[in-house]
Length: 271
Image (tube, rainbow, N blue to C red; front, top):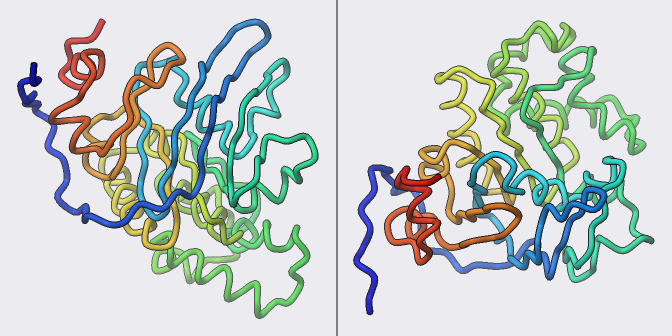
């Protein structure tokens, strides 16, 4: 029997265009354990190039755990074990012989709370390139300006690049952290609730930035804000209790989901 189309109060943005989907990153049969606890169960899904993919679901459902798996940040957690494949550029980055620092250069990450270094704005953005051997001051200046422009922050800070990054507002600090990630010229940007600690105006700027960034990057965002997911993402994945319940185009997820659990969650009838 055909499912009756579900109508929700969440409006899905019309900015998305139909484009050919090319896989940038993919997991196959991914399991994540914290000690004996199975936090993610057999997750297989592609992440598409130059699209924004949103992960939604209640707290503790596994969406941040999955996000951290994509550039092996879970390696930093004691007792965490990851099984299965994470395919990037045709090889499995979950193998033990992979250069994790090189992976994180190509798959950058921005965390929930802004975490600028206690350095100048310039040195925050130039930090990664310097660590990877770039010493030419002119090149570093070009990288810093380009990154700050892409992060929609240049006009606000260009006259105080030598001032402490800690003097910036929360929203500016988060855009600085995005610029710091961009400076490494990644293919993929992972954003773990990047606007959850920000005011509505700063949140709006971050959302506009994310939509703009997908021209050059593949963007993956974890968010508790379903309206945000509907506004800015092309694809949405709904996680629940370590399972990937449903993954589809955002419009489909919010207007005509295929799974009852998804429908209940996006309509607020969950729990």
